[in-house]
Each structure stands twice: as C-alpha cells, then as structure tokens.
Length: 238
Ligand code: PXP
Image (cartoon, rainbow, N blue to C red; front, side, top):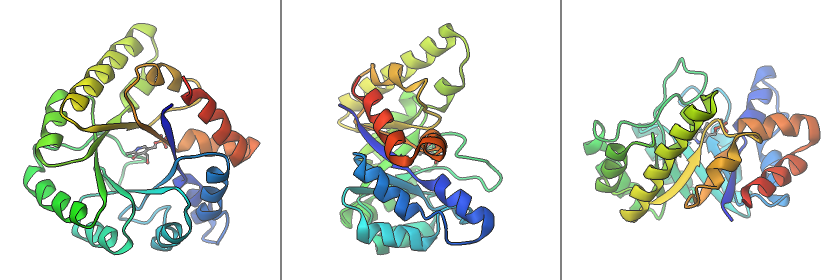
C-alpha cells in the first residue's frame, strides 16, 4: 500500500487568518498520526503565510512518524533545514503571489545550485526529494543532481475535466514513474489530489508516498481529522 503524508499547512492558514494560536497544526498532525498517517508534511514559505518556524520545530520534537519539510531552494531555507533536521526535504519552486505551488522545479536551470545544496542536505542525513512535472527531462536531471526522490506534480492531471484528458495525464505520470524508478529514484506524488481523483493515480502503482493537504483539511473541517485521514488511507489501499 502507498504511504500517506498529510500536509497540515491549511490548519495553519485558519490560525493565521486571525493571528491567534488556534487551530494548531501540531495538534492536527498528532490526530493525523493517530489515524494512521505515515508522515506529516509542512511547507515553510518564505512569506510565512501559514506554517511558522515554531510549528516545524515543535513537529520535529513531537512527531512519531516522519517530518517532510517542503521549502524553496534559498540559503535561508537550507540553513533552517540543516538546523531543524527534518527526515526529508522536498524542494519546490515558490512564487510570492501564487495561491499554492504552481508548477515543478526547472531542475536543469537550477542544476549547479541544486547539486551543491543536495550534498549539504544529504550529508546531514536528510532525504532529498525534488517536486517536478511528470517530464522525462526533469527526471533525468533530478537523478544527475543527486536527488533521492522525485515528487511528481499531479496538479495538471487534477485539473483535467474530460476522461480523455485525464487518461493522457495519467499516461504521462505512468511514464514518469517508470523512468524515475529505472534511474533508482524513489517516487512520491502530490498536489490537487482529493477523494474523487486519487484512485486512478494509486492504480498506476510505483508511487511510494502521496502528499495530500487541502482536500484532507477541507474534509477534516466537516468530519474531523481522524475520519478524514482514515477515509484517504482506505483509498490508497488500491
Ligand atoms: N506536494 C507539494 C510539493 C506541494 O507543494 C503541495 C502543496 O503545498 C502538496 C503536495 C499538497 O497539495 P494539496 O494541498 O493540493 O493536496
């Protein structure tokens, strides 16, 4: 069965909407773990719009599973990761005006910096994943710069409305999984996945972990975090 990493960023979004201390993403992470999540993901954005440094620091000390820190490739974030030592770092492109991460990294363009920073992270014992489009060039480049994993950006698939378009995007993802695995890269996936669209991606096989946030937090706001996580785990059983 594929693993589930629950992204609790949007619990923090609700907290930041009022600038108070609740709801606490750390509490949400604990409930997600109790329901069987295999890991917790948070994105510490440069503008700190949702997750705060303190959230990551407390999660590092309290999680029973794994902490995956999503972050931009900046000196500030690399220094933060080397201080907090999450189990994994997922490097993502970040735009200040975007509502959410809009695309994958251009690994070739960032080749020199990525190679250098990935060495630093790996030397500190951190597993490094690169968030990329299901594109063969990006996957080959991810291997070249020394990443351990890729996380396939599933956003385009999730936006497709016709069955034919969805099938085409699923085929792209399937090719990406097989190319990455042949190169020895681990494969995760995420972005835009929900209770309606995740099953065909699970059926492709070969994805180790799904990182899912907005849909789980949305459902949790109505039915509770534990039930929301359990229902997603059932879908990941394939
Ligand atoms: N994976 C990555 C790399 C992301 O940037 C995000 C969004 O923060 C997710 C997964 C989760 O996406 P969603 O909130 O749409 O499930």
